[in-house]
Image 1 (cartoon, rainbow, N blue to C red):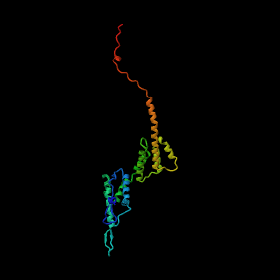
Image 2 (cartoon, helix red, strand yellow):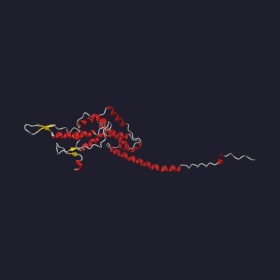
Image 3 (cartoon, rainbow, N blue to C red):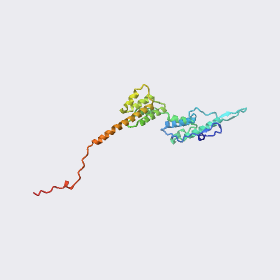
Image 4 (cartoon, one colour):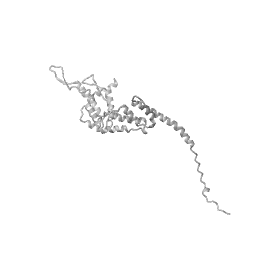
Length: 258
């Protein structure tokens, strides 16, 4: 109960439905370039608190007024609406604290959490045709080069996720093709093995296979390098030590007295 009390407080309108405090202090602030990461964090936290329904439109505001049971009935404030409004304001205010100054100006005309969420999604999740083409070109041109396997795969995943977030998902087969095209000849055994499969390989499984081969290459290189380095050192000829300088080396020969 102690842990629960840290995130809730009493609801005077509906005592059986306490208000929830949304802990978003650790969420990265939304900027012009990190919408996907921000969205994932917000969705995970609010869904865990059963509050995401305030954002996606599945829990709209109840009627502000209802009729009581008097005869004739009298209109009165709806406790369910008062509860909804207060909880929505708590979410709305907390979301505002996760926006950078440049982004906060975009949502100044919104009044509810759902409106704020929809405005941000419409601003950042929809991309121009040129931006989509830019991301696809970037994906096609990615090569591992001197990057580690993990760095290379993370770069691929970032672009794939960005495309998915703006409605241009990349199939598993296409992602695999982009990865394999970005590898050099040292990964040929993995490339051949993946191409020989009947079924598509999952991204995580491909990542694991590449990591294993990367480790194999490093181990083989170290084993090969050790003896070769030692032999090279042994084969180096010893340079003759320079003769010490003496005065007689540079003095004139004695005169001929004969």
